[in-house]
Image: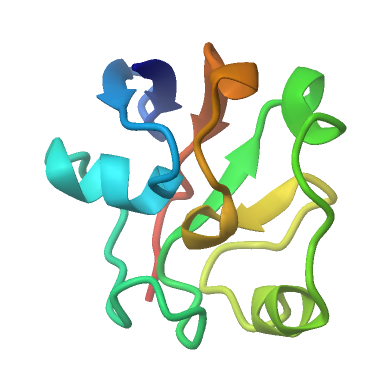
Length: 107
């Protein structure tokens, strides 16, 4: 299992265990992480699973697709250089210890 740390807007941190091959979004939903809405269920059409990836981890992620890039332009919270859709981040052992910040709002 891979550990992912979600940092909430109030700086509270929450560690969850995720299965390899699942998405970071699915791990959040499975463990009831507040702030990950995921209205589209991970189909990359809504941007309500937006997260800010800790700078130390950005380069370790797979490249962003054009669709994800376009969706991030419509996020409810400000898009930053480290913004990603958590439904598009696949869990792997290489991401053990991944840290993501949950934006203040998703919609």
